[in-house]
Length: 276
Image (tube, one colour):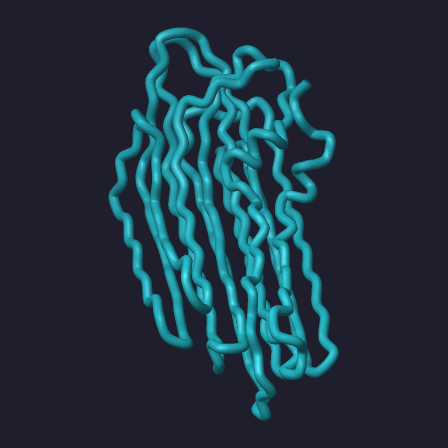
């Protein structure tokens, strides 16, 4: 069997690493010291595969960036990815956390974990697996007028027909995604493509939006199965990214100063690992 490598363009289409830009902030002098916190984490377990993979790949990547002229800021990340081929099972997790105190600082943390498994099914066979996925987002601020805390994350599954190694065909996909921001744009969603062969035994979406302490959590478990009427090579891709950002600008800066903090995701999978 030919060895397939993940196309970075496909990865970006699963869970786009969109820049998170902090909006325009108008400030006055503030005597108190600000404190902010943001955390994003996710875990995925996949087991009870109907077929053994003939090839597999895992990847993890993390990135942190901090800046402070009047205060302290911390950023931490962790990413784990494992795929056992016999018997086949997969586990991966990613975690990003940032916190800070003071009057002028910014910090961002980005973690990424993913697995890829290549399978071959014969005509009339059913490809299936069980899955358990979780996403948890939390933010905390003291002063919404001057502080920014953002936690967002995405967990995506996609199954491709890769019988033609030069042209992958997306068969099914489903995604959990969420964003918690000190302000607007809070959301938590579960989406699946039309015709996805999912049998969900449990799905829970819980949110606490508004105020200085916000959170969102999602958990789902179930069975995926699809029957094929011809010999088919399949590639299962599961990817996740977790990002957290905190920022407090200098109280004495001029009105209209913009702080831009851009999450840098998928750095490793954007290298030259794509299918030609």
